[in-house]
Image (cartoon, rainbow, N blue to C red; front, side, top):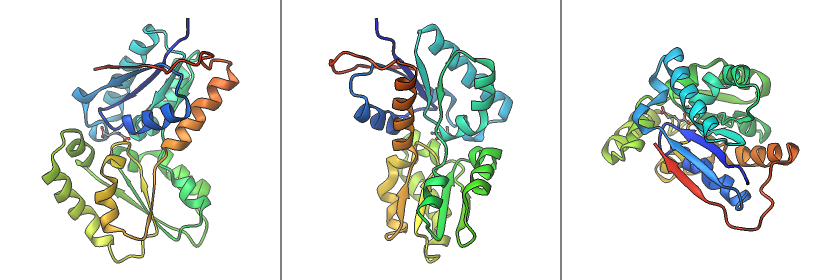
Length: 234
Ligand code: DGL
């Protein structure tokens, strides 16, 4: 029997990742763990977050998944190394702020929007050190509360927070905005209003390609031609 791909996030954000994976791998079956009850991840202490995330991983392992996608920048930047150490037989694909993509494309002023935990993570700073060229300017912007406002669909709060965080960068010639939280593509149009000429970048296509690559490498792709299924759990 074909095994499923496990995928999780602190709620609906990871569906933006799931969408890209399904586009690339339409025959795969998925089990999506929507952990809204623990949203927001981005405002949790490291230990607490690891505990939450490892419980989900154990649940998905019991469901006999063949690969786990961490469809969350926060959980990836904070927990993926420890998860790989502690669950050596599982293949993990993570989601990171697409800072490398912005740097590879030579944007001059890149604004990285992410949760407080992602912004302060070592991994985010490593991505900048490893990829930034001298002429590139990268601004890190911690968007406290935004993922949660999106999760609970509070449009007034989303508008208020975008105004609070983005207004001051409006005239800074921002040419790229990295959406460093999987919830943010859900409000892409609103963010675009602040930076009409900027390219909005998220890591979801890269994640989908990496999932495909890992399944191919481990000979785990579903071989049938039947449209795959998605099961949501929470
Ligand atoms: N969607 C998540 C991310 O990519 C986390 C949001 C949160 O729960 O704080 O970072």
